[in-house]
Image (cartoon, rainbow, N blue to C red):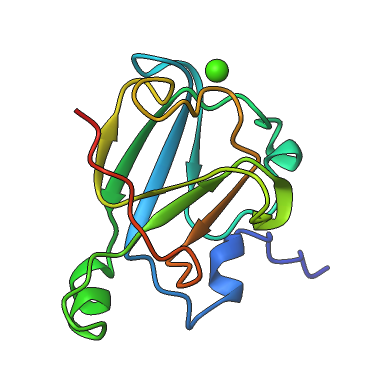
Length: 133
Ligand SMILES: [Ca+2]
């Protein structure tokens, strides 16, 4: 009898060309409390992660491809966009952040409990929000 090889290959290996210049971690409560989700790639609907309209704090960390991505994009900082609509809808508010942390998305961004999708390095969202104080 031949035992099947367990399916231990992580989902990200299905995208060998995917780069990870940033990794975003969302927390349920301000001050980095409650449950959290690590986001590695574009996520069109946080409801599928049971995290729709929940994010109240965020950490945006340099990923393994941070330097390479920056070098191949003229030195610009990679970004992560928090979108109030699913599927990155531009009619609703969008918060564009670079690497850093924000303990309270409500102040100053007025972005508490409204994030529904997350997109990395979206050129269409040109302007970056000011740094979190
Ligand atoms: Ca929350």
